[in-house]
Image (cartoon, rainbow, N blue to C red; front, side, top):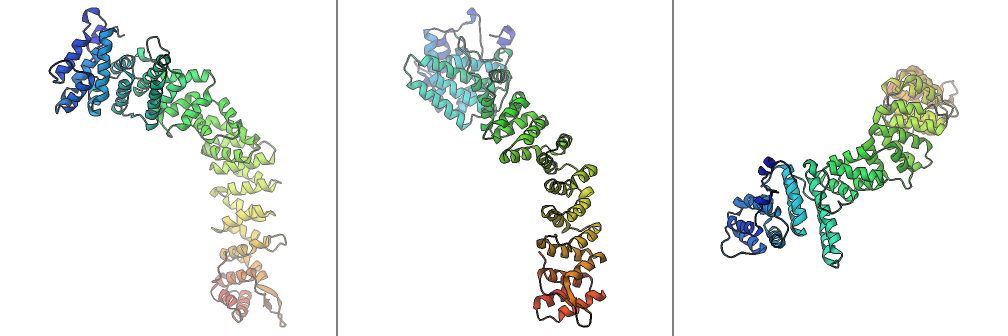
Length: 519
């Protein structure tokens, strides 16, 4: 009850406490009839609603009805009051939706309206209370979702089907739920007396229901945070996460809830569960922010599940370059798979390679680590050339491949002598030779000429001149490169002349224009 008499006098939907000011419920009902221009003998709530609905000027006195309704809700509990409250419930149930919303606008003040709704939940029939709460949601811009409306309707139907002796307790629970919903709709802006739902001697709804309702209407408040604390203290964090997972993404209240609930310890326990719950982990990441990175890194290092590692790598990469110091610290772990995963993570998080650190891993004894180091260094202009050169030197096809692919967009001049020598070596993968020769041809560097002539020729003629090699993918690639860049060279010119006299149209085309496409 509000202690300030001045405050009570300013209350639109008056909540009077003094005995001298008590009004007769029947008098107030008659006042409602007069306000609604319903003359004649006393009518029922449904009849009054029909009269109001048919009145073309009803919108003009909707606020007056709301004010009188507030006074009816404040009358002492007796037989007469219960009869009038039952009629009032019928009235609200049968009024047009626009009029229901209109009578609620009688009190725009959030705190005073919250007290009014406490009386609504305590004293009106449930169907009328629910209708007013639903209208409140629309007025405050938080309309009840279809799922929540269905849930409340289902609870109401179950209540009606219960044996009479079980109904009181079930009704108390439903009224408590409505009260918690009212507080959530007000966003915790009610007065201090509303910091927790009050229902006379009734118990407030369970903490989970309060949190669920807050999520439904995207509104926090003292009641919600108190209920949330109860759930955390009772180790029901998992239930909180399940509620958040069902909510629309990125709402303000779910973000606030997870900031209060999420902890590194709980995240670690969540990651350990099988099967791994991606939605729950994402909810924790929103709550913990970068503080979650240490937990995810620890799990990534120790996880034996490929699916889990893939998920953890992807989530860690979302943090971006800010996690680089943490990840580089893990590179001190001597296990090859840890180092590989950490370098892969640095690449995925777009971290800038440190040249000294990159050099260390580009020369690692394990080819799996070297491959990741090449891929990482290729991402940065500062280390790209070094990565191509070291990759082309590598004896592993898995390391060589990404270096060659990167060189397609530009072979550094420092890499030309490396590739010219490497393509002639016996352990150079045959599948890569055509691409390598094409890259050398496009380089324009004379250091590439010897390698191209090697694949374009095969022995010498009787007169001692270089002889055109038999047709092969490598030979065509070499002839094409010579035609594009070295047509004026004496040795290249001799080979091209022989190619032009070939009876093979593809060889002739390569020598004429360098038009053979190299894939």
